[in-house]
Image (cartoon, rainbow, N blue to C red; front, side):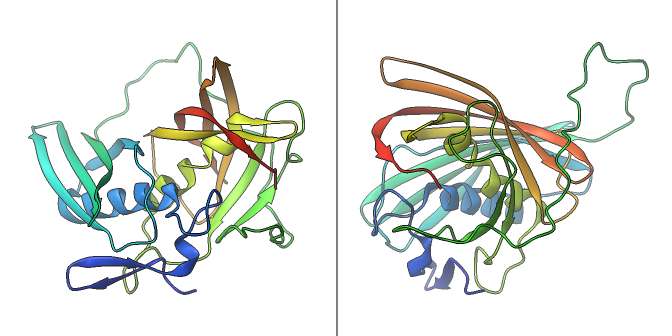
Length: 256
């Protein structure tokens, strides 16, 4: 249960298990989104304001170096708050994020023309997938569908480590971390993962109610080495939001 990062002298120092699957000395992009969500929430969360969107730009790979996250307020209004985060190492800026918080209120009456249905995947009961290969995911996951099967991919995810030592892992940060799985799930081929994502945008109608978060592929398109994918995010009570990613072709990474 060692945290991914420890605060030391104003920086966030990564642990060895903060590495990603593409290189043994590279920070995992999912953690940058989690750090941005964590920093924005710590500074700007207010009662009655809901984190409705988080866009994370992952435009530069970084080795396992200490990270800083700086936040700034873009707009604070009666019904909306917009905040940004910039993620850096001593080598420069490695990512950025923007969050939109919206004022909660009375739910409108009437019937929607379409509502995303709940999926039919019950919460897992057995142990998570055992690690194998050169990289073991530092989170718990359960495959509802087999990796590389044709059709929509489905997984349940659960964080196994704190993000920052001594600081709680909130529902919003859990959702931000899980959202990065939209890329490998929506962009995988039958013979492995051939795309690496450059960003992701998470939208949430509500926050997850517990530790388990489900991710379900709902779209993939690609041409000339550029891809876009989308997923629906779930918890045990039903769908909570969506995530869209863009990705670029990369040497194949074998499936889990």
